[in-house]
Length: 162
Image (cartoon, rainbow, N blue to C red; front, side, top):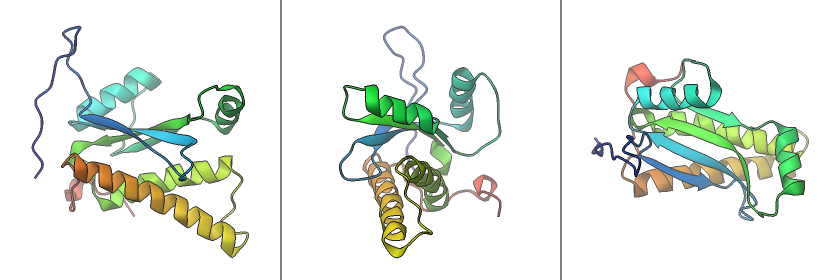
């Protein structure tokens, strides 16, 4: 079981809610990325979600993708070569293979829509989509292991239904 780090106070004396955050990139050109944020517990993740979205919801992890028109607009107007496509939120207690793969599928699907990749059209596009999803999963697992927070098994209560 990973060691839970103590909550650290920031310069303003407030507790820092996140344990770790990093970017993951769908393709090797690293032009687009998702920001991944791992929280110490379920409550901290939901507090962040409510502060960002102004609403509550029930989830174990969530991929918050910006709308496609916003992503396209950013890509045209941004001087920064790297463009954020959204955030992926995880709770420290549920960063196992099932949930990581589930959220990376959401991220890969959103990126495929942005780049107009249809995995059902032909074998080449299907292979490109599979590579995108594989890149995202590989980066997630690598970063989570580096931080020593990857869990091979997730408690049954956190497993996604069906």
